[in-house]
Length: 227
Image 1 (tube, rainbow, N blue to C red):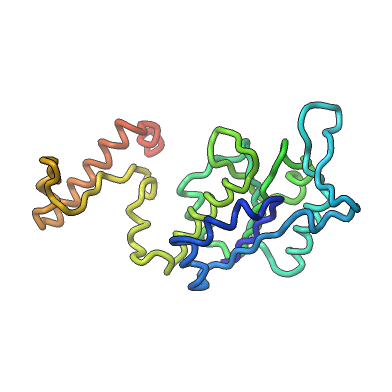
Image 2 (cartoon, rainbow, N blue to C red):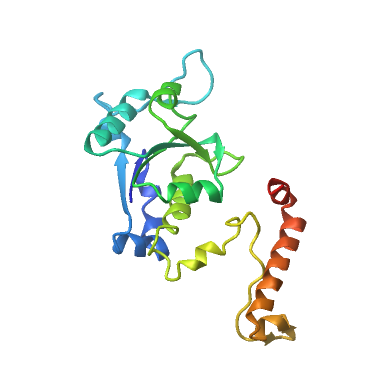
């Protein structure tokens, strides 16, 4: 997979890809991540990439020209499965979306800033709009890091144990059950006896029950989605 991130502030994105699972995925060549500075595609002398909104109002709007030039240049070099714009009013990211995107070969992610991008970018260049939640950030860079992490960890061969991702919360529409590790007793707090029994079928039944109860109590909306 190749992910091309179009941004005004690539320095906000460098750190997440230099540690842990994302670093290992890049080193193992499971994914290629490139950053493209939008200012490099601004043709005016001042490298201006934003302007005041037509009709007035507060804030600045990212101009269409440099974004168009950047994306057009990338599309000349390869075919992209999705061109994603990160925006608070996009479809809300969930595990199903991450699963789908992890199967793609090439993706462009556009990070907005200021008040966002000229609507014509969204109307004519973008194939999918995604939000990481019902809140507003200063820009799309942190959201891009979240989206990339959720996708890359699902690529075959990235996790040491590929079955690990299959037991994550939301993969089966439920929250994951409680998990424990050694020691079995700490300050008098005990691990549930069933987990140290070695009875795998009963352990799986316990985990399923715990997942159902946790989801029902914490996220009952997920239970409704299964009906």
